[in-house]
Length: 265
Image 1: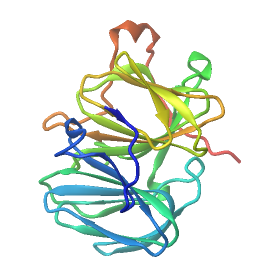
Image 2: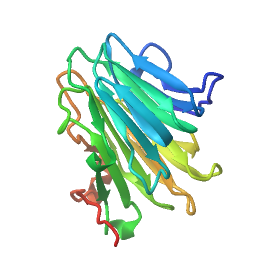
Image 3: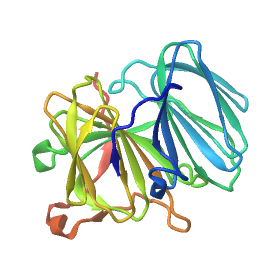
Image 4: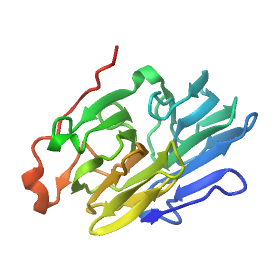
C-alpha cells in the first residue's frame, strides 16, 4: 500500500482503517489538522489509542492528566504523546493551529494512561559510520515492547538526513508497519521501495508494509524527511526489533546498532 491521502472537510487525513482501506495493517491511523480553539475527544470501547503531537501547541486532558504540549520543529524538537487503553478518553484542545497523529488498535488489556513527555523520548542514531554515512538517521522511540509490553502497538519517528537512505538495508518482519511522511518544504520528495516496486514519497504520503514485505527508502538532497513509524504486534508474536534482511543483501548487513544521540554543546 502506498497512498497520497488528503485532508477532508473535517480536518482528517485517513491513512488506514482496520475495517477499510489498508485493513491488512491491523490499525486505524489518521492525521488531524486542528484550528486554534478546536477540540476533539477520542475514545473507543475496544481499542487502545495513541495521540502524538506532530506540530503546534495543544492541551491534553485525560484520566488525571491536564497538560500543555508544544512543538515548534519536526527535526529539532521532541514529540509529546498520550496513550490510553480501551474505554478511556482523551480530549485534545488546540491552543494554536496544530497537527496530531491518531493511532488505534484492538487491545483487551486495561492499563494506566501514560503521557510521554519530550524528556521521555529516546533518541538514537543508527548506521553512523557505515556505508560512508549514506544511511545514517536519527530515531525517536516513544514506546515499543520493551517499555510498553501491555500495548499492541509500537510508535516512533525517524528523522532522515538529506540525501540519505534509511530503513536500510531492505528488510521485512512478520508484523505490519505504517509510515507517514512529511517534509518541512512542501516540494520535498524521496522514494520508497516496497518489494521491487518504487513509489514517490511526497509530503503527507503514507506507506503500508504487510508482514514479510521488504521496505527501504531514500530522500533527495536538500530535503530532510520526517517520518512516523507505527507497528502492530501480532498475537503471540510481538515486534521485538525484529528484522529479516533480504537474502540478496545480507553481505551488506553487519550488526546495525542504535546508539544514544550525542547532544551538541
